[in-house]
Image (tube, rainbow, N blue to C red):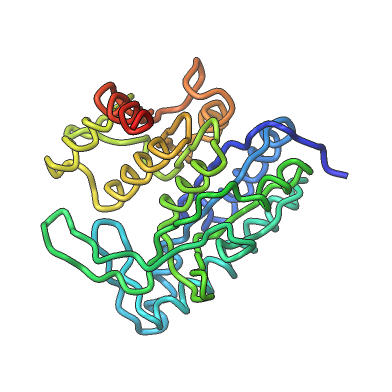
Length: 291
């Protein structure tokens, strides 16, 4: 039987670029297996490059704005097949081979990722864009299935597909879904891991710590890439709604990533950016709670 765990899970989000190479995925699964022996985890993953490749094979144009995929019906079919089918099942199998009791899920399972259609998106350029079948998570209750699985020693692996209350499927940005789950779980840490060493400044160096005000400044200056804009918005959402600590980390540095996941910032942690609310946002939150 799997080991019983009672603490609140850490949420790890992995970009699809960390999972598409078989050798890298095996190494990541083995590192997670060691971490999961004593720490409950929930994993959320994307798979953007594999979706792009599948769209190209199907002759469907890729369309994105500010790191968000514009999703029509044919695109949604591809997204669901790649994320919920290929990427999720393949990584669950790798975790299983490493000795982890991994369970593959989507946001459509047991209300993990209840969503509503995203409103038109105001791009950083000022344009208003209809995202199509893209969902915004709306659930507020604790995701009981994830809690139950973690307490029994299983590791949920969630692909970023959501479902509306009337049963329609939606593409959900994986960073956004991970942030939403971290907030609902009141997770001690959300770690968003990709193929860059945290958030970069305008000179290409890693920014060690950012407040909400720093995020606003970086985005307004044009210094954040389209994908990073979406990540930073997700970090803000997680902290605003209850997650306690948020990091954007280099998923290629497995040893450093595991230190961040277990301990946050300490000696031996890999290159990363820690996101904090900042004093102005803290005062705003306090006034909101008091009102």
